[in-house]
Length: 334
Image 1 (cartoon, rainbow, N blue to C red):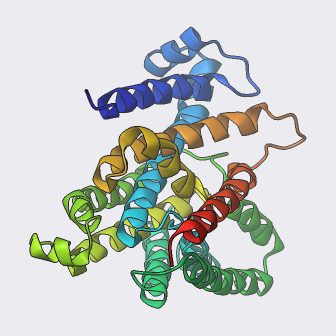
Image 2: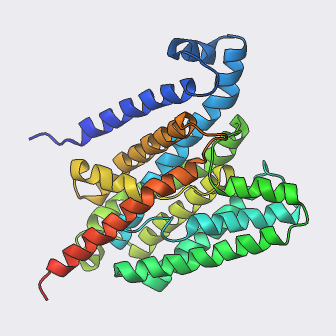
């Protein structure tokens, strides 16, 4: 029997292509699919400005950020062997936002400086490493969630303190809206700012695929197969932190994509964590593209932030995963 994974990957790539076209078409200015594609490669007047300068950057960012969230979510779930593992659960987006807000309010750098994603990455790295250290490799659902909640709450409190002490109310309003998570008003400069870090994070996580497959058999088995567990943890934690920090630096906090995407593809890709990585990344890209299209279609006075929509959809899914996990643990023999 042939593996369904190649078909799954092909289907997800086609879905991403269709959603990317929809992302170029959907918006206040009516532009048809053919006109949008033509505007990418030739001068179509105002349509070219709208497609190239406004919709293309947010489409690319949705793909890149959705990809890295899905990929790192699957990697962390494989590392901790826990279906609740995700950068959002670890408080990484909040910590990354805290790092970014500090440098923004210090006045040392601008919103398009390379220092911004680097600082956000450091914040995310600290949060993920702290939760992994506190919760441990055999963390229960309760310990994992509480550890992430504590770290995320601390980072969120620090962000609120920094905002409340800012003397510029206009900057405060702008940063608060940015923290909600959105691709609105993003340019190709933001794509260039995030892309190198997301590429590096992807390489780190994908290079850990062999170790994840061995780790699924147990730590002792992985060691006997020559897997360096310390290196494996470093690759995944560093990849998750770099990807999250770069994403938050350009788009604000967008949560739960990394939690949802692996669960959607796992029944089709199999329960081997290494085989789930790429499909999870593609599913994350499709999810975020769909969410970004949805916020432009929902009737409202101002555009709903995509981070708000992913939270509204992600929290019920998160609770469902907890309930299912609880039921599985209750059925296990004592």
